[in-house]
Image (tube, rainbow, N blue to C red; front, side, top):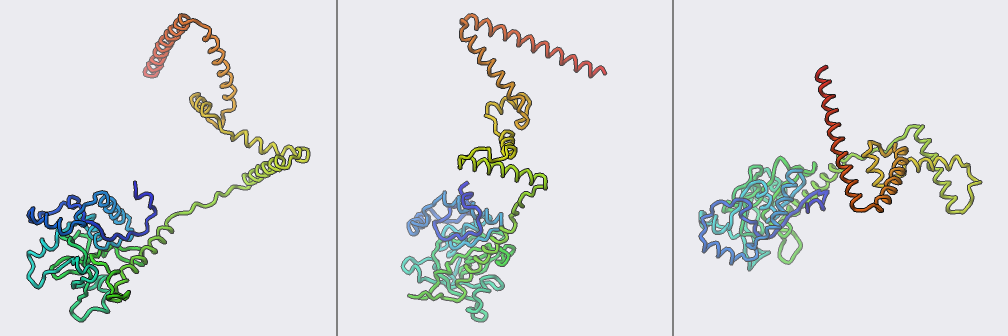
Length: 372
């Protein structure tokens, strides 16, 4: 799978993009006419160009985070992906679906192409949520309002059950949500979606944020990613080095010395008269006992019921059989077609006879066992 190449994943930050394919969240009846749908496609041409491959990858990524409790921060489309991944749904078009039921004072413009980065609308922050904690110093008493940027024409319609809203627009649209059971940055837990972009909420012609709390979402997300990574690393058991008993350690050292002596003889060109031959024999014996057999030999050894480790005696028999096979081929090569045909018929007949006799013997053994 594509995502396997990115393992291990310690956190996912998913941002903006096109509309999610409505078929992926079983779009509820919107009540929009065909003319309205065509108008939506015309007004938001770049957003309504569905990318099914991207949808598939991002939804799988979100579900992976939910399965493993990997920190996830969804911004704009990323928040919609998170909601859909958990069984929620979206408005096909917020203005046309939600505005129908709103009074004039409640209507909200969620996207302004003429004032793209400068456009803001108010949201009401829900008390005792992470968003409230981040922006509490900027909230006026009893108002709980902040102004956020807005770049979307779709949004959360039915919030998935596991999530809790953190902010609402005046028209009732959920502008932020999180999973309270999966939120503790210090412990590596962070599952959240924001419809707005805090990183872009800056004062005109300045790098200064609109509110001191704007960077907090990213700071807490990074904190969770680091904690999750540490937790993941600590859970991976490092295998301990193999410890040999004293006897095995002595053998190992002798073998290593034997190879070292052999290497010196080879590289320096000196004779073996300066070396104790018994020390060289240790390495030679080790090599002989651990030399791999050819695939053909190994296959035949296994067929004969032998193991590779104890196959020394069988190798001699294999060599003998190979010589016999070679001799037989030489003899058959000189035989005529008629002679070879007769020989094949003979062995076929012998095979049938052996099979019948073997079957009778086996049946006899079974009857004897049943009789006893």
